[in-house]
Image 1 (cartoon, rainbow, N blue to C red):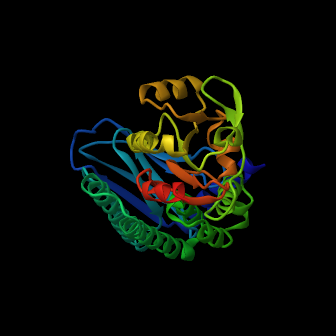
Image 2 (cartoon, one colour):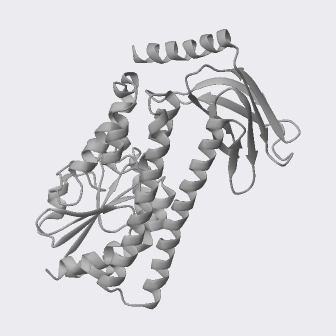
Length: 370
């Protein structure tokens, strides 16, 4: 029934568009003939289930492409995908839409909603860069100085401030278009930048079709679980297998640890792999003082998981249910992106949640002294 509903929505989109005869023209400029002969696909992302709808495809010629079509008053998001080039995110609305590619970015302009989208994405990237630079400065600081609580609080405060800016920005962008398929696409697309409570507020302003859909419910449940496992809440016990194939629970691995550091990762996650050296440093420095580190993998392929643990020297405790995003482990903690980390004290209370393997160092020392 859900697939029929989505198909009906797409048909209505096309039929209404034809009746109102509102043309859009999307012109892509790749700035080079290097990609001539490749195919550009224009798709409508599915915000309620699986599988996007392909509206059109064209062959790239003379360093560019052009799509022509019609659209209705309902705002739909569109994505232009080109292999080895990237994905351009646009709003399908009447007018001439320009997509400009360069080595660092993809910029969209030409119509009111696409100009608004471009301004939003540029601001979001600015705040993201701010957080990234803060993270790099913290790493540089750690190389030269002993970590103090004051220094840690300063850097963590800067990171939190950037996250609040991103959450506010996403909320302000989504709110006016939350009832539309476009708004719902960008709500899900920017889920990692939204505080769970803010996501809940925006979700309630979306359409009933979206709210009752498989994908909508999945993200809403994740936000609720994130709130239920936020700082100050007790950890939730989950079950899976270790690298030997033995059934284990999280409580088995935690035991009587003074502090527990949980790292959600996967063998296919580049950013996760990049943080492993920091996790190794935590393990080497604090394992004898009462710290237990548990890496929870979102892999579905056991072979890939085991190969990665060996390749990257992951020698601490491991847990997985080998069911990826849809597994009970990921769902229990509302995991919709990785890496994510959780810090638990000796009483089983979650102290921090985040995405960094660097910032917890000072907090771990503090907790071990208690």
